[in-house]
Length: 225
Image 1 (cartoon, rainbow, N blue to C red):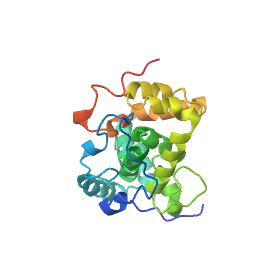
Image 2 (image 1 turned 180 degrees about the horizontal axis):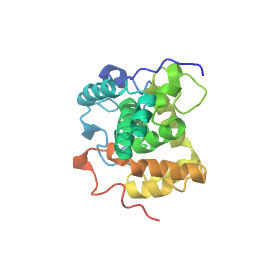
Image 3 (image 1 turned 90 degrees about the vertical axis):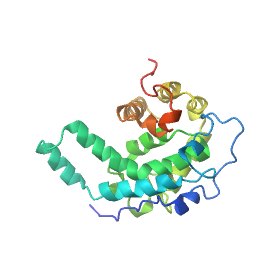
Image 4 (image 1 turned 60 degrees about the vertical axis):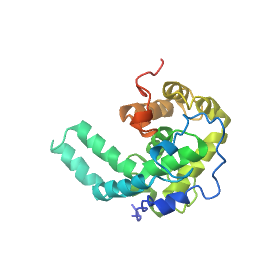
């Protein structure tokens, strides 16, 4: 198998300030997401990564990125970590690459980070950086992207315009209803929809959509049948 150079995390504030690269839409007066959805994270301007996040996530990435998949598998085989701890560790590694780009796309196209993260996980798994390489083509479009943020931006824009995704877009302000509509969305087949919802709920990814102080009492436990 041809080896590829892993893409670089683009979490510095100056790079994410440019993340929208002309794709950013003007903010609506009545967006479907909760008021101040991204500004409440501490961002100074619309579409910009909060400075504290731009400092913390590269630090997390630097700590977790060196963990190779073979070592993680060996740790599991030897029973050196419980499976749930290992899964949490590898998901944290995945988020250290993907969360800030997903939040930038959330701000620009009003699609929850949790959906974009689950979608990226569906395409590449938690070892995304090992498969994507220099193309940064997270969602397998066949295109090359300057960085991972651009890939998330294009995917969010594509979803926001897709008629099959419309019911999910209309439910963005309600976490439980959003998951319900995602589980029905014909943009993915039945197995893929179940996988997306399962990824979001298993790892509580909706907690990444907003800060704790602005979060509903529960965002993943009110899924209607």
